[in-house]
Length: 277
Image (cartoon, rainbow, N blue to C red; front, side, top):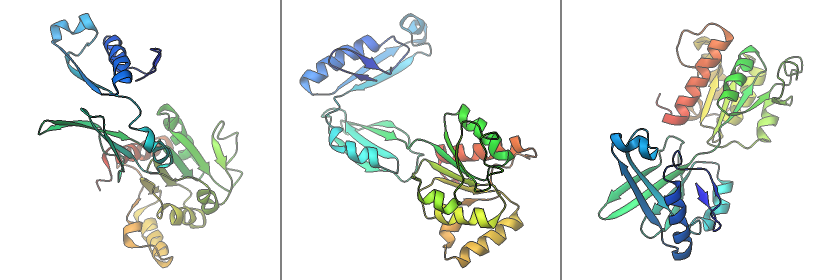
């Protein structure tokens, strides 16, 4: 939640039961420039009275934004997850970039110090190469998850607004399209055409990028041939092993919608948990 010096706020930290205390503390912190750690503890019997329906304990760090301002340009230009470590007593903040999006924000207390580690993940973007039936189903799932989708396919018969209404369509060749797109640690790239002339071009760019999830449709035999082609183009084993193939979790999927579900589930698992293959 963010609060200004007039008491106006955006966001919240609960269902409304502790916001008043947080706003008051924010006013004090803006004057003193010293952070405050607020603690609200409530038993389950008392929970409904104050709005904490699950009971338990809530701690809220109230701090000024001044410690974050020196890092603002780096935060906005980062292509990986941003990690901010804040000393809850002094407000001093350290900035770094994480390896993947699987990190969790947490409070660590040790030797009298309390350090809050805040993870700012890159927004999720799904780039699909191939405007096919599976892609149509993936778009619907992505929309329900508020994931931005871009579809690349130079075959205009497939990549049409009729088949993909209100979708960001690109009819450039995949390598040209990807070279002109920002690829961050929040980007997933999935190739679905089965055509090496299209999929391989995309994979050459994707495997050298910061994308957190790269997947290709096709059988194990198809993928083995794909691996050989990518080796011949100079990609390393480490790079090639980043490909999830066959794409998707093994759920026995048969229909385009089921295959889309398996791919999206694998993508989200990789985003939240890291690549645990």
